[in-house]
Amino acid sequence: MIVIGFDPGLERVGFGVLRKVGSQITCLEHGLIKTPAGPLGPRLKQIHEEVDALITKHQPQSIAVEKLFFTKNQTSAMDVAKALGCVLLAVEEHGLGSEEYSPPQVKQSVVGNGAADKKQVQFMVTKLLGLKETPKPDDVADALAIAITHLMRSGPAKLR
Image (tube, rainbow, N blue to C red; front, side):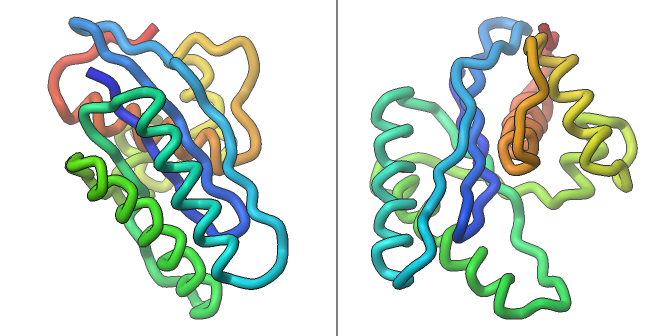
């Protein structure tokens, strides 16, 4: 089973592609979709096109995304919602299902503490996937953590 995890944002969308074979989970690819400052339309189009390309390349069976939660900054939350919409549109165009996980759910699954900080999440993602370097920036580590959470909730998994 291949799953792609996404941590959506307007400036940066983190992604992580994981494969689960039996009980073994390995990282196939991780990275960042960056959009330049400027008009909204071209930025949203870029997010949609790059997510579509990732789905086409890896042919995942499922997609996992960070559940949107509202902060005090409503403008920032709206931008994240727009980026999330682009991700979900690409997912729907490929006929795939998606699951949403809240930050505390992801932290609980990966670190064992729903109130863990970013550094703890980065550390555990690096360790659990056997990566040589810590995935950076936070968006990438978060996307991998979201994908790990999805695979762990999909059945027993042994992380590398």
